[in-house]
Image 1 (tube, rainbow over the protein chains, first blue to last red):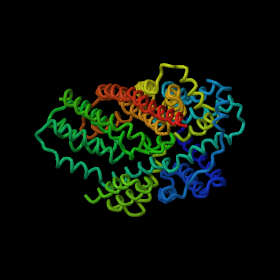
Image 2 (image 1 turned 90 degrees about the horizontal axis):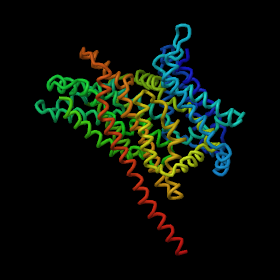
Image 3 (image 1 turned 60 degrees about the vertical axis):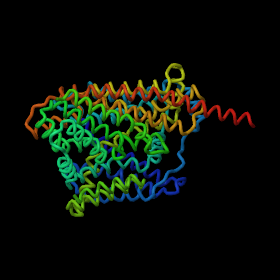
Image 4 (image 1 turned 60 degrees about the horizontal axis):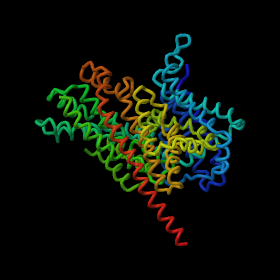
Length: 322
Length: 235
């Protein structure tokens, strides 16, 4: 059985190798801090395998995570001059290779699609070939590995250090943004166990007038939107707002169609995801990946659409759910 | 009430543009301690949070091959290819991407597209290439705008497509939450059907905004070019 952990290990090990390259890169004025940051993330990826199975204590990893945040947050990381090709070389190479260049690039989506549709159902000796519930990660991981092999064969590139160096350049360019989504996921859990959700739910329920259907709809949907903006994740907001308003008031008191109320409630949360830096993997990481100067660029492009869609959700629920 | 202070830390931190890692770290420590966690439990929470959320960073696995291909001119080739489709403007191309992303997500193919595997290596050079084809060199400001809108097409296509699929996380979260909490028997199919009206609104409105981006680019770049031509003439 192909397991998700294998690919976490692969990511961890490649981070460790890249960290060694970073630490040795004299063109980077902060080479040691940069190497330490990525080395800690890489080691953390591997060590985590035992944390999720409860075979190793989580506290040392917690210390490492805070250290990573300090390293990148206080400016101890930087970037070297990437060793890569010039724009002229790239144009010449593109002219030579032509559309064949798309073959490895499209291998990733093609393999991901094959895993999602076909390979998911295969099993060998009664064991499913892909670990259940991890098909998305596995599709991407297998796709990337296959694409790398296809690419290296096609480009007749024999040195594995070339893709590793290229990948490292992209990591350095992204910097702290890479760690943010995982740190935010942690914050979400801490918010949960500390009872932030219950407080917000209680506040919302206290503010809600019990007699107006339309006010209740707006409170539920705008509440989902705002709470998602705070938590960065509609999944965290959904149980809280649904327990406070969605179920007792909209379904219980006003007899709304449960499927419509809940589905539209979740979608109002997604509108919140579009506008919050707390949803870093959708909004901040792409800004880093696309080398934007304005880290809020994607959010600004999404803001008007998010606002209009929140309005659409309110109208759709008012018209069809009751 | 006092645990809500952590939320305040986050809001102020992001509003004053402090480094997000520090903001989130401080907010987590403050909320955890105010919420009654011991320092040991707090460290364990940070460790477990990291270990359990590794899936969001898994896209890093695609960076070496994407970097390798970019080194050999993948982005340049994507620009050349888009130039052959003269009718495909930046806005039309991105609207097409939005539609494909949404349909892909609606049939469960969420990881086929994404910021690392398709937006950076393919969609952005194509969207920029289509504009370069018409207006020549793009100013940085325009490049930022096109890239931001490319990212938005991916996100909006994903968010408002995936809920139409039955087996996606959010639909399963809804059914498992209400079926266990309130003892109902909601079917994923009903939830998925109720996601369709918003999905259509999302495609119509964001698609329209993407098409309007063409007119914005035209207005901005023609005046920019006219100004630079005028500057040339003065010389």
